Image (cartoon, rainbow, N blue to C red; front, side, top):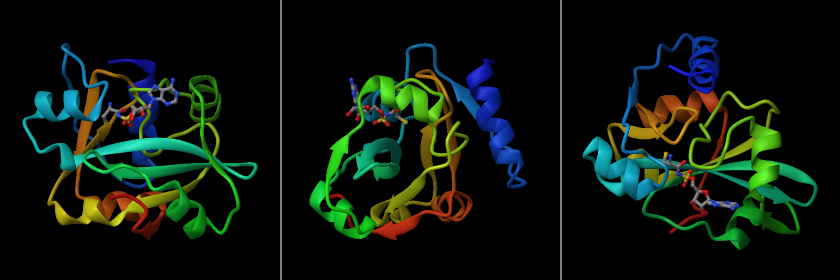
Length: 155
Ligand code: 5CA
């Protein structure tokens, strides 16, 4: 498939999870694109968003229909200042380009936060390393394997 997809699959295997990765040639770059491709609600798409809180890179897994409230995220993380990572920082810290950033399998381990609204669905869909590949997963399993902190930081 691609080196990026392989890295995500290998990371999943470490948690004894075999990912069923689907490819959509028309692209799954944004949450709206991914929902249209899969044929699911936008709320079922997991946006894997990278922020810098103080000097630490964090991952905020966010429902596709929600926006991150950075004040709430920074409070949950116990930090002071929160900024969105730029495209270069995302690539360097995760090993993936924007539009394909998966929720795990990153080059650098990061603290992770998980939008509680994702638990409303039986299946959610996340990027599998490229802007054309996604995988479906039970949100509780995704929460468990990422070791993320569950919170209400997005509405
Ligand atoms: N493949 C889809 C669905 S799984 C996906 O990766 N969606 S995403 O939301 O996780 O990634 C795209 C996000 O990257 C957008 O929400 C957008 O806010 C953010 N983004 C796009 N361009 C930039 C940029 N130049 N710098 C920082 N963030 C960006």
